Image (cartoon, rainbow, N blue to C red; front, top):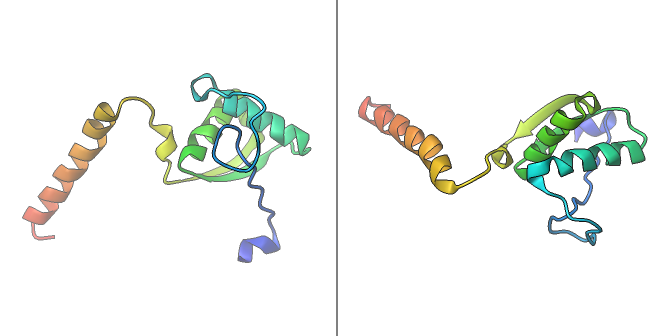
Length: 112
């Protein structure tokens, strides 16, 4: 709440995601369509650039904007950026869960 004294929050209904708006076009996350869409949205709102605080799948969309139009991002905070990992679950599981479980096991064995 203290941030509202100096900042304004924009939370657009994202095309293709569950929400109230009807999608008027299909966007592909693998082709940076969401990055171009955010760039168009900022231009429509007459913003040259903006600070972003994003989480989950929105992280992938903001990173797509960083690839196609990085000048639109002044600062960015990625909270729980689960959306940046794409692909098959097995490689994601083996690269993330097994090391985490090993780390927890080692901590438990050492008395932590």
